[in-house]
View 1 (tube, rainbow, N blue to C red):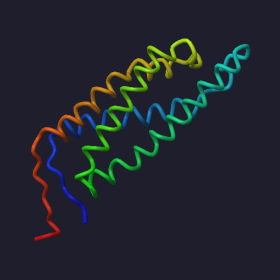
View 2 (cartoon, helix red, strand yellow):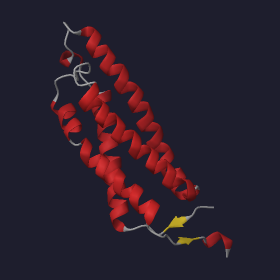
View 3 (cartoon, rainbow, N blue to C red):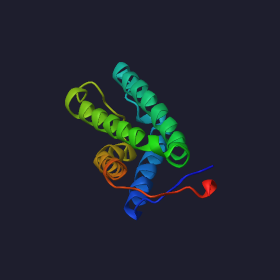
Length: 145
């Protein structure tokens, strides 16, 4: 029924870092207090929160789908992880270079810490992608014996 991939401990550590980051981002952006939103720049905040909402839906879907893909459909886990890594790198570059003047996040310590820790998420996803792509894996198929 489920495949048991023999992945390294560092892969599981990277996965736990990625999950901790994503859950903290979900919590942070879903609990933004109303008083931190700037009243005089309503259009910019609306654009930012709409973009954050779309990204959070994608993150929530990935958080739910990744364990299923990893344990049930292991041969597709590599492609899904590489796609998530590419998406994370793309939105990071997009936020830093393209949208830096358009997107203004509300003033909050949690939001600024989440934004500053994004390279750690990217490094974790990058290691997961490298391990799934380049390391030979042994899969215990205990149900096919």
